[in-house]
Amino acid sequence: MTSLFSSIGVYRVFFHKLRSFPGPYLARVSKLWHVWKCVKSRSRNHLILDDLYKQYGDFVRTGPREITVFHPDILYAIDGPGTKCSKTDWYDILLPEIAINTARDKSEHDHRRKIWNRAFTTSALAEYQHDVVAGLAGNLEEIIEKAARDEEVVRFDECAYWFGFDVMGQFAFTQSFHMLKSREWHHAVSLLRATGQLLGTFSPVPWLSQVGFQVGGNLLKGVRDWNEGLGWCRGRMAERIKSTIKKRDISSYLIEESQKMGSLEQDRIWLNSDAITMVVAGSETTSATLIFLFNHLARDPIHQLKLFNELAAVPDISNHAVLQNLPHLNGVINETLRLHPPVPTGGNRETPPEGITVAGTYIPGNTNIVAPRYTIARLETCFKDASSFIPERWYNEGSEMKGNDNRKGFAPFGIGRYGCVGKQLALAELRLVTALLVKKYKFWFAEGGDGQEVFDGMIDKFTVEPGGELKLKFRLRSGSTPRPDSAVLGSVDASSYYE
Ligand code: HEM
Image (cartoon, rainbow, N blue to C red; front, side, top):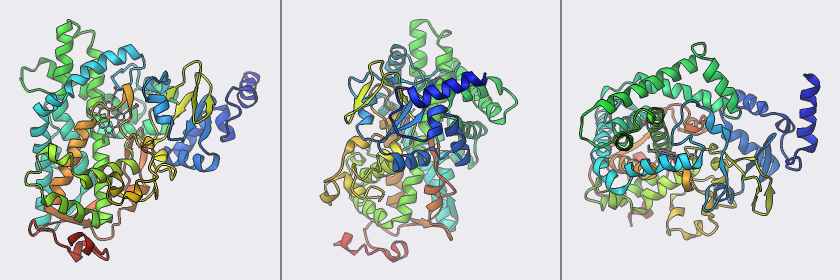
């Protein structure tokens, strides 16, 4: 046994086709070093990889057959038009569950995607989007309104998660989790979120997670939670199949297709797993973005003012077509997604047998590629003053900020056949909540907070989880006329925005 492992080690270090790529020595031998790093850093894989970039440059060998690429061209190379790359075995992590987002077989994936796309056409979204998002944003606002009136602190991080999950419950099954109303975590949501942390830690070695999920059974708490969470999602899908409600939701499109094809029973595994995807993929991502966004606005109140001035000219903020075209609102959202991509390092792809060439570097065939959005979107070669929050860089004001931009480094929703199907829905939620709250309230950090932990404590569990608690105080604005307010602005000189 010892000699077998030694031979494999010697081969991987000295003779492997990736031997010329720089990287940590242990990474050449096994991916277990990476799991250890994730455990030690408490799931901060985005920072582990960011450090490797600083140490080794654009192309780093991070596993026996894995290269992590930090060059902005990589995002299009692996997912752009004409790519021959495919999903890696990472996507088997939750087998036997198989959903649209984990399907590795291209034709199988494309077939499911076609059905999902029907639930996300502009007209389908219009049919159920307005009432759901606006209604739940209204519930969120009730919490803020009461806290503003009573001068209480708002745990904005919790509110953002309650909003994100309530929206997805409603979209997925026409069944909100009612967390905004009850102001309490729903049991199933807590279970699904807790298991996500396991994914973050064991992601670098997917087979280890599979062993955990298969063998761990009732022994590991994380696995027990996961199974219970899955059971809950399956239950909702089963109810939705039996339900006679006429209202449209995402499940209704998926179920309708299976019924039409007479394949409801065979498709159960897809429907059940897609149910989990709807709940988790659509909520954690959007909620985390809201938390980061409001954290930035509390730190930089000048952007609350700029947004308020922009929104003051909009009589009806529930008009999505108008919000879609507001430069600063969309600049703030883009800048938040750039600095804090909700999928910061995930989305691994395998090169085709003939390999690929990226920015002049040949990567051999059957190599796993990691393309960390977190680091790529913060490259100075892509964005001037890249680690600063500058929403103006996304429109022409202050065009000097745009000069050096390389937008290839910005793909928070992914691109190509596996790109996010919920992008427009997510953007609609982010626009509406931001517009609604900024137009009515000023907000700042509660006593003792500065929001730093929200950024620094962020963890990467495939989707992102902001750190710490975001405690904010809100105050109703006294009128709709834009004017400077020293209580909110502190030392920031905003006078130029009122000329
Ligand atoms: C700010 C919010 C969001 C961000 C940044 C985001 C980002 C992403 C990314 C990067 C991917 C590709 C993942 C991969 O390559 O494995 C993805 C896929 C996906 N997202 Fe989102 N997402 C967001 C919101 C949503 C919402 C609201 C939904 C609604 C259900 C959703 C559903 C999905 C699905 C189903 C996939 C898999 C698509 C496929 O494989 O065809 N996402 N998302």
